[in-house]
Image (cartoon, rainbow, N blue to C red):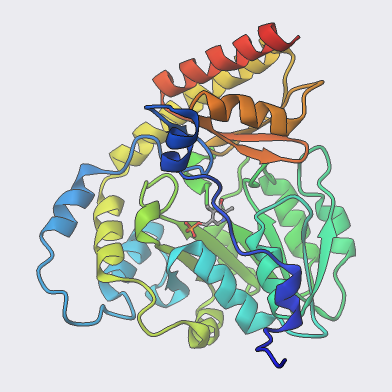
Length: 361
Ligand SMILES: *Cc1c(COP(=O)(O)O)cnc(C)c1O
């Protein structure tokens, strides 16, 4: 019998699965409280200004401002860039899709790390582009090996900085050297979803680089440090000419009134972001201490998450142990990624991890 057929590339991919919901886990294991440390959401919520701003919205019958003019003005002022250097999207997920639609097709290739944000590969495959994955070196992007994969058919190179899931970073010097070596026909996408959390002295300050590199596109989001993941809003910063071209692939009303309003309010409250970043830094240090004390392997992180490997234990086993006790983390084949929670959440998690080591040794 004839059946409808999707493009064959789709059959090689899986739809995104967020893992088990808190509700499912509660029911399955008879728990009353769940701590979700699986998606790098902000454990402190978002600025109180956001609730105030969205509750004063009155009219819902008209479409949002597709160009996000007010938000555009605010972000441009905040970053000291031109308004026409910005492109807004329904989360960075959508911007990654837009970039892929605009840049990738059969015969083209794209270069990325082998353990990085999975949406880069996902959309490249849908676009029928060749994906050139370069193994991480000690958990870090291997920029020399990535540069060596670039050829005439390379359209996009993805650098996730800090990298999800490892939390490692490309420093200022390494990035400069890489950009100098990349041919100008290759778009370099710097995914800075965790930019606000990065505190290393030599973490690159990338906006000034836009003046020198017309092939650079920086991604930022309100989902992580600003705590607005529910609203779906992020943006790209690049040369105005490039933004104008990418804008053709953008849906007319891709960011909602709620999202724009929430983002404008969140941007006004930098004290909230600073507080979250400072707490994150202190709590990360406690993770390092626990790892050292127990002989866990980890990568020092510039994000709000940490990648840990417990010698002698499968990550699925660690994941399951924590799940049954109400903590949802993200398992990977060679370790687990844990979002840095609040002080109380982390303390409970540390106790569980240490108990697991005692019981199962
Ligand atoms: C969370 C995340 C995104 C997606 O963020 P949204 O703006 O919520 O779509 C993009 N890149 C990386 C590296 C992320 O961790």
